[in-house]
Image 1: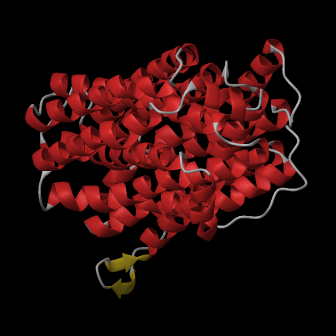
Image 2 (image 1 turned 180 degrees about the horizontal axis):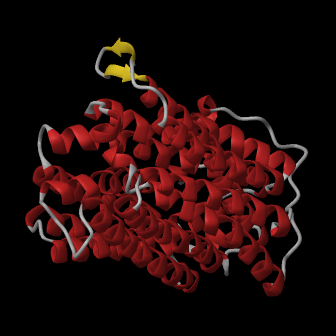
Image 3 (image 1 turned 180 degrees about the vertical axis):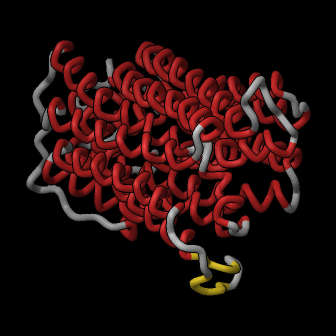
Length: 428
């Protein structure tokens, strides 16, 4: 049983975490509006572009459970700092990819021609994925250890909200920099900001002691972990759906959607419009993250908050499918962002409520595995789907149908998790 932390101590820990991940979020956002447009710059096919976009998620998918076990064993501070500096390598790898001489390394079935610049980008994205596994799980484990069932939703909401503030800032910065001064400058800015994130974390991030009894873990142990904690299945499926649709589908295709529909605002073209709209959507997610986290602490059943969250996400997909205009796109992304922001902290808080102290890192890794499966599949499915078949409209409608399924697969089971059960298994 861990000691209880005062509100002042919890606030100090949470703000230290937010300070570190804020700049990391900016670095992530700077690169995002530019990466989906690499096929024109690198002269690569849609499938190879999808692999570049998915590579970081695939690496994180493999690293999640080992990272969680390491965090359970040694604490969160050192792994988080390692992760933040590892992330900083990736944007400089993007710059190296832009300057890599063109040429075909090999012709691979399905992928087609694999170019030398494409390989450099894939390696850079893999590096980012390894670092981000330690950053996310470390932040979740730290907040979970220092909170209890009565305030966990609130502080997880603040943590996710703080991350959300950095990401949209980066989206705007990345889209505008790409349109005005080019991709290379955008990538360099991302790298510098990621280095700042690691430096800030090194200076202010506190340590939460790990457990000497923590066992190592690999992705193959996930079925055994799920058998011990069956409630992780609906929580994990909810995370899978959110990440598959929001990070894997919407954010991956939005710049191309704006380009196909000739969207522009003033001096901004596809990348700039997509960057600004995505930023506003993530800001909406950040706002609802804070509100839903606090609200869930006041309810007997946190799962209730997921119902309006999934309804808002569904509405956004209906709008973007049928009305391809800039104003409608803004409304759709705001609805989606609000839905994602409302659901994410509730799922994480429930996971923390139901997880024993000595397994927080590993359970965070399992949660991330579900999300990263969605993030990895999203780009691999999304770009070929919208470019070839079934096209933008039907793809977004099918996405809305998947969200509706979450009301039955996720929300209903989570409504059966009462506050008394949360309190009995939490770290209070």
